[in-house]
Every structure is written in structure tokens, then in C-alpha cells.
Image (cartoon, rainbow, N blue to C red; front, side):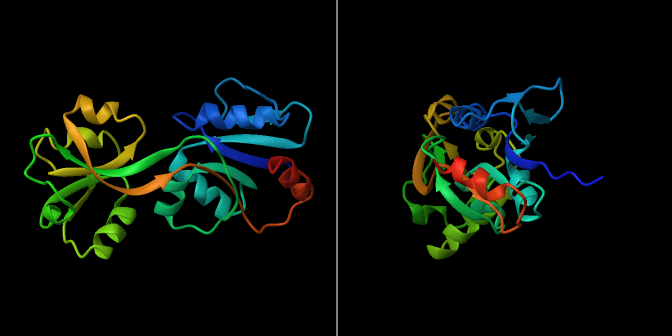
Length: 204
């Protein structure tokens, strides 16, 4: 049976989740929690909220499964997937930094030549290093990037920074900012009944 309900995807947990839900609620879109289900129905509209891992969201949008989504700019750029950005949102602001240990001999960007950098953003890091003619070993890590210098897995890290407290806790300091990021509202070119009306609501 075809499901013609419109779908909005947001991050299921983490820094974007609460802010995304608050934004949707501010537009009058209220969703009912459904136990442990990752799909919640809107109380008075033909809309479902889908709760996903942030790095899976571009796939759902590009394949037309999710009609709209809220995602960090850093994730969208890293995934290199096609999506139409229809609105920049004024929350989840952060930056993607390369950071090094406080006592590191790496003092300037060129000092990264030949060094190891751990990151969950290998594509963005590779692009940045190439633009600056720096050859470093990129070590892809799925999480807890900040501990890699302590464990001698890497000489530097490239990770998302908001307050900087996590860096300080692991005796790391920013070296350079690769990207300034914020939340984005995205969609695709798949036509669907009621989609234009929902788009107009989301752009208020």
C-alpha cells in the first residue's frame, strides 16, 4: 500500500535534535511520540517525522524518501549528495576545526605535512588539504576523535567544535577552521501532493 504522507527527517539525537523539533513546533507542527518508534505522526496534518542518524539524512532526501530534512551544513557537504537548500536556520552553529595537542610541535598549517589527522569528515579534510598543497595521512574515525592523539593514533584531529570544552578536556587547541556550519532546511525535486503547501509553511 502506497504511503502518501509527507515526511520530514531530523537527527534522532544529538545537538540538532531538540533545536529541530523546537523549530517545527514553532510552526505549529506537533508530533506524537510513539514508544521507541523512529516515525512520529503529526497531530493534525498528513505529515510524519522521521528520526535518523545525521549522516543518513542526505540519503533519505536524495532518494525521495524524506520530502524535507533539517541537517548540519557540515554533514551535507561531507556526504556530497544532491539536495536543494531552501533555508538556512539560525541554530546548531559550529565550526569544523583542525586541532592539535597543546604541546604539539605543529604550530602552523604547513606543519601538518606528513602528519596523521583523525577525522569523521575525511572528504572535507581531503579537499581542504589539497587546496593548501599539504600531504597528510587521513585516518577516518566514526567517533571519539578527540582521544586519538592521546593514544598515538593521530598527530592532529579534524572535528566539529561548538564550545571548545571537549578540546580543552583532552588538552587540544584549534589550529585552523575549515568550515563554519549551521543547520539547513533541505528538500529534493520529487513532486508530491501537499508538498508545496508544507514548503511554504517551513519558509515562514
